[in-house]
Length: 371
Ligand code: TXA
Ligand code: MG
Image (cartoon, rainbow, N blue to C red; front, top):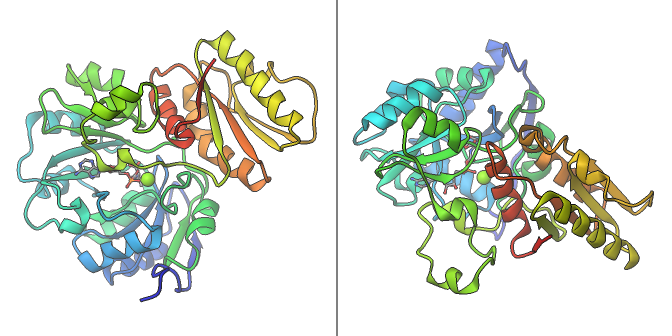
């Protein structure tokens, strides 16, 4: 085996209608899955990289293609709630309520795993993550495949998640068999991961369904501290040392990061925008190419034109949903345009803003500046 065991197969791209997927294309993609191949497909959150979730060899191929650490478990995607319950050793009432309220949709449930789920999927944990995605192409593919489909986000491990087929091609060409191109996805950040084996249920990763929305339907819901402050986001070093291991293995890895350094400015709106303006000026003075991801309000803090300044405006500060939709696309654009550094404005961690802030913190690692 070579060092880069994931590379070396021809990758086909098929365009597919996002709202009414062509049956012959879906049949072809399902056939690739059933014979153990890798198919990237759109969901409502991000593009996923799918394999037959009951075929350990096929699932191992996902880890090779992405360069993903083997201790980070995968989500199994299904078309019907009954199929999800069949993967679980038990299906608590709160899982049923969550499934009825949010599926299909951007919510993943962590439930006790049943014996036939391969350990390569669960990374040896006693639980399994399941979800029904809300995208016509994903649903058609899952129905046609007739097996649970293991699918992480379709990026190379550690990179920003893909919100367009072009992103998948950039990261995974030569490593997967087929990419279904249905254009840009709607939500732009991944699903909320909710562990229903605890009482109250615990959000392990904030995502497309807001914590406030979960609480309105399910009552008490806890939020794992790592979902807010990822490991290494050094808000307090002593606290960092005393922290227990993350309950969701994915939370311990740096993530969502382009190849250049990324800096995140947090704090009250006026203070963070002032600091943002100063940081940008600082890097421009050093002669660097500076990429900036800001709200409409934040863009006002940037002084004048400069051909080394590349600005992407995510929308008004009160629209975290627009920040979510554009974030990964903008990080990839600014990276592609040759930024030496990317500076991002934080927002309030409310609604889907909590998921946006989680991704921004993870992309920045320890480069978080209090404005
Ligand atoms: O929106 C999404 O969830 C996308 C689309 C493709 O469905 N998928 C996705 O998968 O984001 P991935 O692999 O990039 O992230 C899955 C997250 C990881 O943080 C992983 O650690 C966690 O879910 N996870 C999976 N199984 C788990 C389990 N049994 N217990 C705790 N966390 C689990
Ligand atoms: Mg991912």
